[in-house]
Image 1 (cartoon, rainbow, N blue to C red):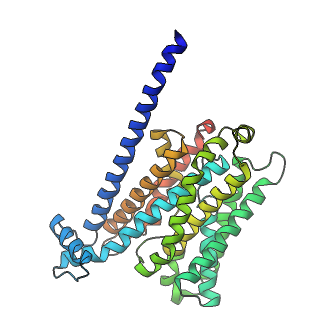
Image 2: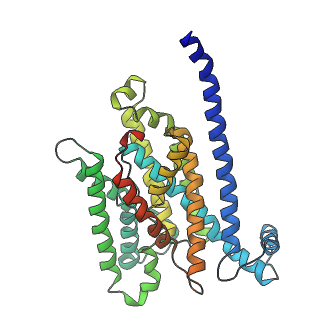
Image 3: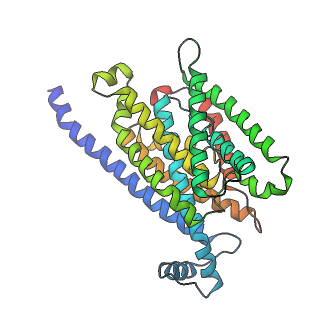
Length: 351
């Protein structure tokens, strides 16, 4: 009787979970649309919904708007698109790194991947004179990959291998060292500080369609790999032995997921600079709402990251008027307390 009742209840429970997660997806899409509208509306000049409509209409028809409000909207479209794409990519990267390392405080910023990419690009600008988006992207990928490998090797030394605490400590130390090197390269070049400041604290103010077109295929490909890895990551959460028993190729799944996470982070850093804490905060919030199933966690994290960075960029523009506060500063201001809260908790089983 008990087993029969359980069998009858299970499909209902699964259906309820799917409906709940479907509702979260719909709410996430609506939140992204709202964040995009807010990003277009607020800044040094606030525009009305009618001006947003005029600006979008003129942009879609390839025309230049005649009213100043609509012109402001047109100028904000590239940075809004970049904020949405970069936030989604960073949150997805953070979710992947947390799943691969089974570390609740894994994040591209905390593990030093962001600063590795930034250091290589800064050195390329300062010593090699690079200036094209492809050069930025190539150096960012090289720097991010080397930084990730270095942190993994350092965090794996000693008894017990790569534990979450050792990886976090190795990442934090590496990130601090790389940040110091970035400052060491920048400080003697005072005349170029305004240009280079972008590589110390990331932001989306320099959004440009041609640069975004260079990284867009890479972001799309890495995101696709991430979603395909979701079932394997669910098995990895049960332990390597169980995953092998379920037929998952543990090494290949980890390699693909880690590569996708590094590529997502490096591509964003190449166009927006090092933006920290998005990949830390968003997956944790999403996990509380949807549970640890990576098939839902990854797309919901992407939606949440897009919302967070678009809102952070808008807040930076509003509070910094007539200038602006970089989005990376706003996310760090919000993310630091979140890191403290997560560090005080040890609910590792949730991963």
